Structure formats: C-alpha cells, structure tokens
Image 1 (cartoon, rainbow, N blue to C red):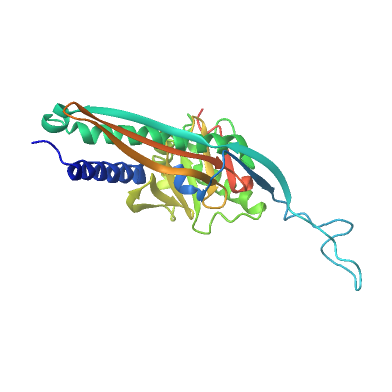
Image 2 (cartoon, rainbow, N blue to C red):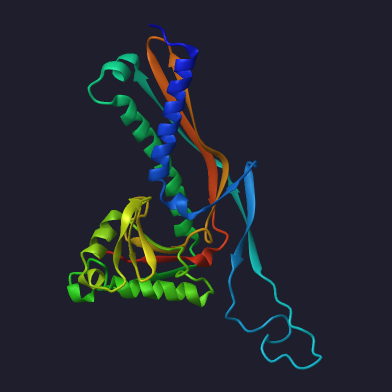
Length: 288
C-alpha cells in the first residue's frame, strides 16, 4: 500500500524527534555554553579582560580615597573580536528495503551516526576556541603527569585545585555549581584509577551520566569529551566563559524518493565565542 501524505509527515516527525533526542545526549561542550540566537553572518563581540585584583583606576587607587577627592575612574578592558557563523551539516540515505526489512535497525543507526558526526564537529569547534583563547593556563610539572611512571608523583587533585585558584585570582568562582573539569577518555582513565582521587572525601559518582558528566571532585563536575585534544584538559565555568551564537538550531528534513529510498538531512549553524576567557583554565602536560 502506498504511503499517504500523513504517513510521510509522521515518518519525518519521528526522525526529527529521534535526531534531536540523540543530539541532546551527545552534545557535551555545547552544554557549557550560553546559547544566544543570531541573525547575522558575521558576529562581533567584546572579549572581557579581568583585573579585579588591581587597586587603581585613572589617577589614583580605589582604596583610601581622601575626603572631597575625585573618584578614580576605571573601566572594563574589552577586545573587539569578530567570528563567522559556520554551518555543520550532513545527510544519509536509506533504501526502502533496508528501512522496512533489514534485521539490523538501519534507520536508527543512520540517525545516530549522522547526529553524532554533527554534534562532534560542533563540540570540536568549541574546544578549538577554548584552547586558543583560554585566559589562564598552566603546565603540569614534568614527571608529575597524570600517567607519570612514578605513581607517587601523580596528583590530579592538586592540579585541579591549582586551576580553581587561578580562576579565583581573576574573580571567577568555579565552585558556584557551574565548574567543570573537561578531559578526554585517556586522561579520565588516568584520573579515575588514581588512589588519591578515589580516596578523596569529595569524590563521588553521579547518579545518572548525562552529556559526559561522570563524577564530581572538590566541587567540580568531571566531563568526558573526546574532542579534547591529547595532553590537555580544561577547568571552565559554564554559562559564563562561552557563548554559542546560534543562527539555526539543529534542524532535520527527510526527502523521499518514492519506492526507492529516504534521505535524512540535518544541519546546524552557529559559532562559539569566549567573552570571558579568564573563566577558562587550560591545563597542559597531562601525559608524559
């Protein structure tokens, strides 16, 4: 029996819901961003520089202003940055035979792989911005990497606390419930197998893994993302450091070639911005 228009609509609605359900689970770094809509091709924003520890404005210090004296003037230092909206897109095709009679659920697999490829590239673009523009960075001392041959020298707890303190020195609170340690799978393995982590009183597993968040430690959520490059990790305050300027949310369409196949097309348009770079601390030399 031939499909009716309504049946075709239902198929599209089911595929659209499936794609977005997969994306909701697969996005990791994007979940750390404030999502803001965009209608522009080129997005211009101002990147803030923190200097709260500096006691001074124009002319005189902030502390100890004499009676009747002019107030010192200070302003936020901003750097103008331009970014171009990018499109992340792909499509996959499934034959009518595979959709209707294949033993393996090919439609579900194609939806999953297509969605995962797009979400991975979005997260990878966010990681590139974090790596290039992190306002704080430090390298773990050689010989004390998280996989150091000398087991006693491995101290990821100290490295995490050191990063938290670097953010705190810039007036950024990573312990406000929005602090994340973002690592790749290899570094997570090195962290989770460390007795200093497992025996730390603040370490606990989350009840339900979602968007890569697997544990908490020292008031920080631990997130795994394979977009994080080798030998690096990040401490970040979500919703403060990063903004995702979204021109088009993840969108799907199905294109039916009657009796032959269905093409599943998905796309998203946006760009990552880092308006508060000091809310990101890049940790390097995590591996020997």
